[in-house]
Image (tube, rainbow, N blue to C red; front, top):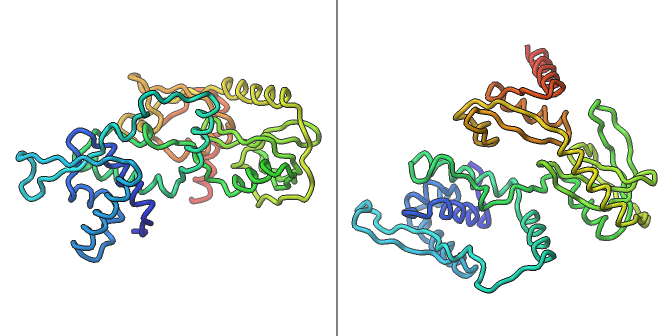
Length: 313
């Protein structure tokens, strides 16, 4: 098991406590759910680690409640939970639209795959112990907008410094081409990070997932673009995505059902940005789902699965 950093351990601890608001968690529940405590060399060291973490949370403004009840296990009567008020807005606080945008940006920035995976593992352990509902997940607490691409940081820096960049870009058919771009804006739509940039005097969209090389920053000032034109390009992108509809049938009680949240009939209607990449993502679920429409997406998945069979036959 990979060792958790203190930040990862605190994040996992917070998520587990947030996910168990009714009766809270005993220390032993917490030690089983949070992988970071399992690395302690002794029970005493584990307890000291937990006491330090509680103090750090309190100093960060997260108020822990200690519940005492004779109905609890006699060997572990104290249970811990996070006070609901710890995650409520202060009374009278009003946020402008600009401040809300900044908060959204901050939420996108602090989250990462590295922190989310251990937290999800901790919640899975709690579910297996019957300490929280099976349908609970991190989505109400943890933003899903993840900047997981190596190109994100250099592109964001280039936008901030108003300089041009160059990178290799892979088209859906596999063709590679070199793109020299004046980066304008990073957007996240349908789980995909997109760069809006000026290429050959035209505003174009580049999926960060299709950038196949490192991003090289050039000592050349970025070309300017009219903000009205940029706004129209963003709207065109949103319209394009909203027109890409897929209907998927999902097998109940599977990982796919947890991710896609189908209706009572087992169906989910969703939008997507790039059909080829969406097909790759759906293939990971195997027989847990079946694409009803569009036919082009069905064909991509069918051909992709055939290619996998040929490669491993």
